[in-house]
Length: 279
Image (cartoon, rainbow, N blue to C red):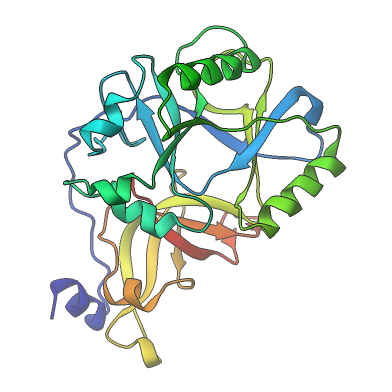
């Protein structure tokens, strides 16, 4: 029996070990949540891809944490020298397969042949976002490799049109929509320059402990004790597969969860586990 499962059976909440950072997380633009009062005509809209965010600095491909992505040499050889920001993606509903492929220390060519690098931003580039979208298209055409593609950007007339596009994307198996201010210069940090619109809200939190399972989950994970970036703690006990319950992610890892709304105390209501955050 592993030490983790033994601790779970004893009902212990483990304390996160001290981690030493070896890679520096790059500054990137992070999305706020879309609100009805937003003027949608000022934004370009795209599908929110269910992939793994990847940053290319002209020499190396990295997760948003700064850790290297071990892509095949042929994959990165086809990328331009200019910095890129985008998603590694295999298609709708294939996140688990994608995640397994891009996390390997030794890449598997057959898996990476199915991966596309979908570009939605040019870090540090000048001009408005609309102008950078045109630059992205030019870079992709010049690279002329099948796995490098631009994320399609489009405009909508009003909130009703936006909601109709959201319904169509979700019905087809997509996650949601992203909105980026068309006139925005390049910036980093969390900003209304970038907004996300999904049927459910989602967020990330760090694992700081466990609670043991009961009933049919006795001897495995019952709930994760999580801490949000704002320092709030809560238990997350739903949405786990049997495999995750048998082999929970380690303390110190970050997970993504979805929820309906926040309580008056700032805690997520109806929270459910989505996945381990791979970066």
